[in-house]
Length: 97
Image (cartoon, rainbow, N blue to C red; front, side):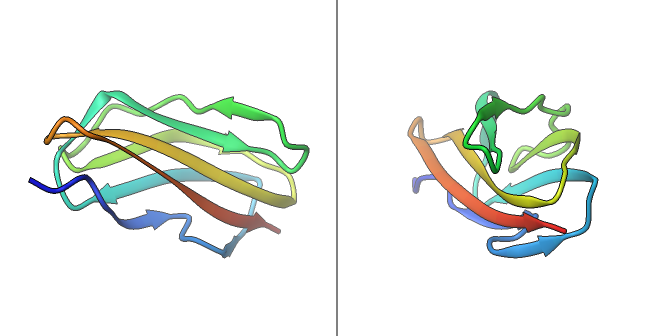
């Protein structure tokens, strides 16, 4: 089995999105363990905060509850435990108008 690979995300990498409210949604190519996965938000100041995960609506998806963001450059850091037992990590940089 392969590690979990990010297939699509909202926001997408290097996207410009309208604020102030935004929902984060990630879809992977395989099942992930939502209870052992994490989403973090890196704010323009460099502060990192853990996002509250929404209930998992599909075995291959992960989402965070809506967050309020002011204008600036952000990064979503994700860490998921895949069905193959391996942890995969990645980052999604984006801009809020």
